[in-house]
Image (cartoon, rainbow, N blue to C red; front, side, top):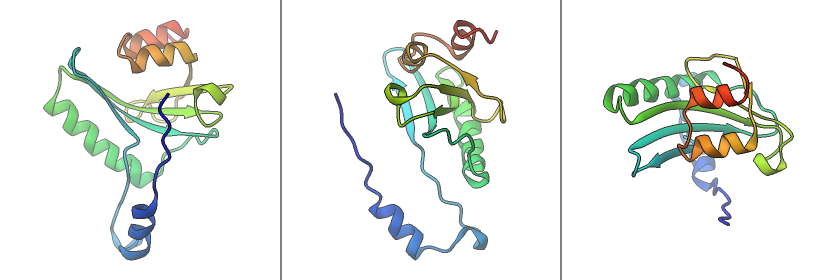
Length: 137
């Protein structure tokens, strides 16, 4: 089991030393980039916990740029940019898990099972198959 706690020292430094967004600077981080180098597939994942079901405007704009660039650069490898919401802190502590395509499905969240999420993140199933397994298609 991997245990990881994000160090926010640099985040705090940027917040205290760089100009604010009202002066035009948009700063965001990407939560996860998952790559299966054997299957030659890659996806981007933004994760929110405790039922936070929105992505701020500036962060969404950055994801739009990244999504566009990845689609153009890696059309056969890039599976998409996804927004994942846990009702707790992770799948194991969550009663509900939701997912949607970050750019193409504004506002629409699909409830999924923990096992189907694992299969999706392991590149065993596609997003369409994930929705089918969870009775959305």
